[in-house]
Length: 363
Image (cartoon, rainbow, N blue to C red):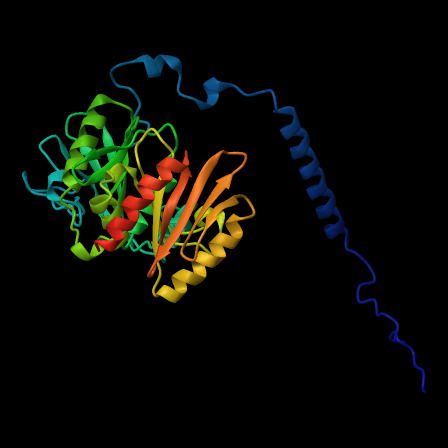
């Protein structure tokens, strides 16, 4: 194999053989100039004199003939009594008309956000809402006609009642007191309220904590009672807990994902027997009886890692937790899976399950 030189054998040609005196002097001059500027900048670090650059205190204290720091831009003339171009709309769009009254008016145009741009409004929370069936966010600002009080309203269309309940449940904590205003379920905050109605979830937030803003927030809750709701929006599971089992609205909740901390369990409805106990009924509907049987078997298998089986049949099981000292009951009937969690004793289980089964048999 022939070997050759890697580098070019030709020598470099020197095109310039000398540097002119003018170029040398220019370089020396620029070097001296930069050196002098550097020395001057370093020397000025503690030589700041406010009187040379700021307006004097005497001028600022003068009430007349004070200097104009910022000339305001000219405003376009308009006929008295007419709205200027770009003024907020008089109608609140999807919001009930009663959100506006003699004391509060719209301060910003209605804004709507979809799945594609929801992150622009609530970047860190967007994915949580989308997973719960988010459709549209309508945003509206209100301003008091008497002072600087402002209220921002976020109204989320979550597609169905389950979606709004799921988001509402994510906002709850043990210190929150759930209240009801007609069909609206909510809890108050220092400067507003958070709640839901039908498929809608909302957040009301004022710019300060005041009695005026809290009063307006309560009035908005009454307005939200008239939000559009269809009969089809009410799931059968919800109607069973509310109508058949007589569980109040504030005690009904929905969990879309990771039910009982199992990633395969989804779309379960819960109803607490009362506000002072943790005992909850649960109900879930599958598409077919075969699918409910498969889910029942998987749940029962996983539950045995934490619970001990006290009683087991083809369509039901009673389990006991040794550490928590409570019972978990699971049963199935047709496409439905239902039961009780956090039950205190066997007597409570017997009475509740008898009532549940009777309601299912009655349709």
